[in-house]
Image (cartoon, rainbow, N blue to C red):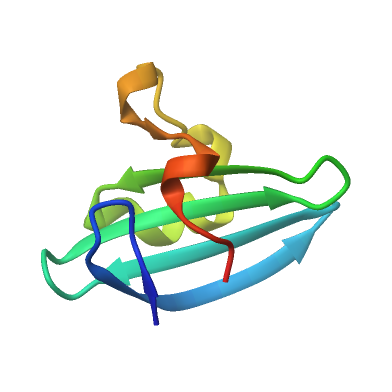
Amino acid sequence: MRLATNGHPQRELARRLSGGLEVALYWCPTDNSTSIEVWQSSSEERLAFLVPREQALDAFYHPFAHFPHASDELAPAHEAGARS
């Protein structure tokens, strides 16, 4: 279990590696939210963003189709916490 940006514990539901990207799907039992984390090891860049629960599995397989367009929905890497 790890902490989300809001300080609540998260549980990893799924993780996959594809084309140099590692994608993880998380669920927070405190507020029942789901989020996606995309990690690119070659550049050490990470994106983390919330997704609606009903779209969580699709977002896991197609994270960039669910990528938020407004910058206020993104969690900067330094605020999103350490990579698990």
